Length: 264
Image (tube, rainbow, N blue to C red):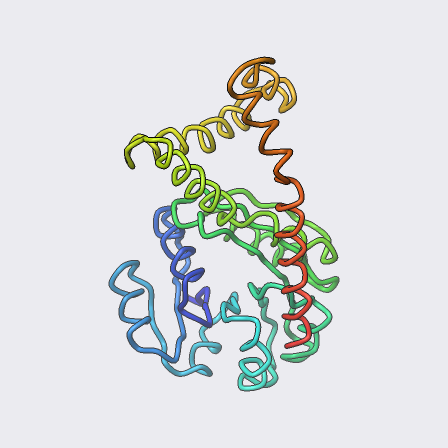
């Protein structure tokens, strides 16, 4: 039975392997990496097959997932060389568009891009997908099924991929959680109480919006009563430049994506 083969045993492969294991994904998973320690850890934690020879790994693939850093993609694809059989390949490399991938492994390879979230580890992920024009319906279904196992899936145009990548990162929530809890501790809360309060403010509020039927504007009005503490807090945050800070962060992410594309 052909496998889903990951080339690269780093953080996102670990997160996807964890989520797929929880989902009882039936297709065999094989991971290739140059570092034996990473392979041993992945095998121990998630029961994946491991392979230290790149070409043997590729030979086992029904679905080939390129899971290395953007700066390493070109060298990896050159090392693989041309593939002489039909194969679907999925690149997880941020910032590298389909135009840079299309001819890399030869005409038999159909390309997709995916941008999964590390929250895929617990099957709470969100993955954006884009497919090249020559990908058949059955192959699209297979790729979509893989990522649906670990969370929500959105199919978007290739031109929106960088903006999505900069926006959907869980790091936004983690950074906000760490910052809000840190500032609350300065006001006198102990660490546990500060973390609980900050996590509720972020996670539970957003979960209530996602799972309910009330619009965001109505929820903001409900939570920030005029003349109340929340309203005063939000007004001060806006005056301090919250929107400008977020815009600067997203712009930096887009700039890095363009840099990644130049590396391809």
